[in-house]
Image (cartoon, rainbow, N blue to C red; front, side):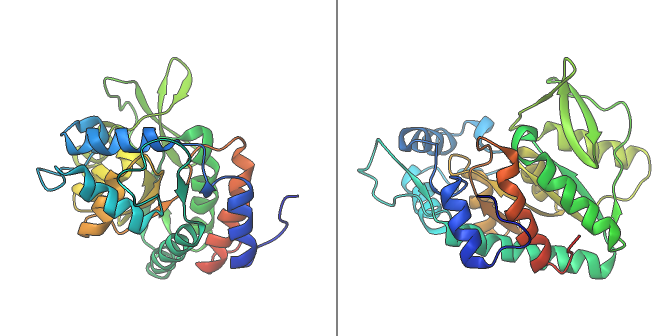
Length: 263
């Protein structure tokens, strides 16, 4: 049954496992290891807008970070089958994210929201944006007419997304965030004090030197590597596209309560 109201930590952990946002997640081990290897081999599609250089050229180093920060199996000989996200690490990440949101609210900061996973996380970002606006923050409105090779950079419900063929697109690219930040600079507008995002939107903003926080799946290691290096402030581990976006509602409620931003 869905959780009504704001869950306790224990209730949220149970919910995350039952809905497979964490615990035994849908992403298989072989997919995780393939992505770690591609990142280590320099495939920039897996760098999520970051500049990793040759610092993570050993996939075993990537696996070690993912075991520590996400909770995937740390055995390099475990090649196929079920992999995991530790729900306690998910909630720890939410607590770190909540602390940064509280700081934003107290300082009435300019905050930009964006997602490369609109099918899963759009409403998480929308609700967080609404709570911060109520607290006095400015939610950054992106310039009109932005586009990348993949499509148009649009904004729906306060959240920047990629649109192509009248459809919101899943993207790992950092180029949409590049387009936004370049557009703001060209217009003489201030850059955000904080970016709340995922995928390349979060990675590119962090690489650009902005305070950036976000969500990432166990097969998207770049943001966790960036967090370990101090480039990205917070990476929350979770499955970023479960069967229903409503499954994220208790998580969002917990996050906003922890930040003092209850709706």
